[in-house]
Each structure stands twice: as C-alpha cells, then as structure tokens.
Image (cartoon, rainbow, N blue to C red; front, side, top):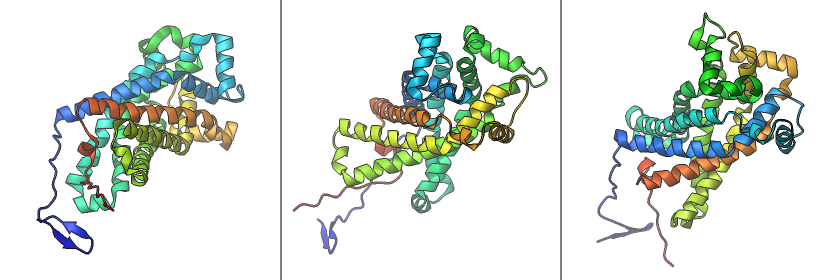
Length: 331
C-alpha cells in the first residue's frame, strides 16, 4: 500500500540499495580500467604532446600546433612526432592504475570514515577536490621521473632517443653524484602542483558537468551509447578547463626539467627565472595546444574508463555515495 501526500504517493517501506563490494579486487579493476584508458588515449595524442613540449622548450620557433607539427615532421622526419613514446606508455600506465582507484578510495573514505554522510553530501565539491588532490599526489610520485625522461627525449632527441627510457633514467640519476636518485625528482614540486590542480579540477568538473547534462536530459542514462556520449562530452570539458587552470605549473615543469641538469631547481626558483628571462606570458605558452591535447585526452580517458569499468561489471551506482532515485511524473 501507498500513502497520498501533497507531494505525491509515498511507500510505507524505506528505499534501499545493496552496498557495493569494496574489496581489493574492486579497486584493482578500477586501476585496470584507468590504466587501459590512459595508455590508449595518451598514445593516440603523442604528436600533440611533442608539439606542445617543443613550443614550451623552443619559444617563438613555431606559429602554432599545425605549423609545429609540419616543421618537426619536415626537418626531423615523421617519427619525431612520436618522441618519448616509451616514457608516455609507462608513465601513464602508472598514472591510470594509481589515480582512478585512489580517487574512488579517498572519496569514499573521507565521506564514510572522516565526515558524517550528511556533511559529506552537503560538501560534495570539497570532498571531490580533496580526493582528487590526494590521488594526484600518489600518481605524481611514480610519474615524475618518467615525465622528466619524456621531456628530455622530446627536447633533445639526438642525445636521449638512443638511450631509451632506462638509459635516460640512468643519465639523469648520475648528473649529480651527491644527489643520486633524487635528481629524478627535481621536478616533483612542479609536477605535483600541476597534477594536484589538474586532477582535482578534472574529477570535480567531470562529475558536475555529467550531472548537469543528465539533469537536463535524464533520458540519456537509458542507453549505453548515450551515457558514454555524456562521458565523452563531460570529459572534454573537464580536460580543457583543467588545462587552463594548471597551465602555469605545466610550463614551469617543462622549464625546470630543461634547466635542472647538474643540480636541483625548485618550482619557485624556476618560476622566478622563467619570468625574468621570458616574461609572464611564458607561463601560458602553448595553452591552445594543451587545451586541445587535454580535451582529447580526458574525454578519451573517461570514455574508455567507463567502457572498461562496465566490462568488469562496475556500474556508476557502485561509485556513487548518494542513493539517487529518479521519479517519473505521469500525465
């Protein structure tokens, strides 16, 4: 039986749902989904990444993305557009495997263990930003040395391409014998700053833009292909927005990686030197290519992440801490 109220009929029984299995296997499957999505998307846009890095390391040499790609291919061969492929695959496999399950874990841990459920729901944006930042810190620890190798390979291919990933890691490590392996992390503050800003904004923007689209067109949830289309659109928007906000840190990262040979150059010193030498505008050099790059990357990441996640039997409701109920109004 149901009871009639001014707001419509209600059930005498409370609505409920079964809690998902949050075992290690659950997060491992999220990691596999994230890793597959990141590797595939980053591999596809390696030429864009090469042009973006060259525009930052060689300011004024190219007039734009297409001019940069054409110039590099003409002068150095088409294979030069795929510099740093090995580092890209290894680095972003780690990134996907670490950041996606970490975000899901920290978001649920904060909402269930640290905050009360009601407080967590009321401050959902803050929880998403904190969880995204914490996941990005973990991802940065493995990504930093690999990204330093990728930048070296793209900026100075004649020196580092023959060495490969492991050889480049060895060269960077031995540049300052007193520091050793710490040389591999000279760009950690800059990369972590970029990743924390980018990652936290990325997850928050994706979730809120998805909610906004489904709020206007709830029927898009009904079919798999339309739901995946929403992931694609929301991912593209979140990637572009995140790239704009984190662009200064990305430019400083490239500058630090290029200039820190033989010593450690911190993010603040790197930023000061970069502005003194090239002006404030240098912090936003390559922004257009990075927006295109990030929009494509993040759209593909979330699309493939959802595809692989669904293949493993993990639904969106399993990741949602709020029990959402859709009401249908007849007439």
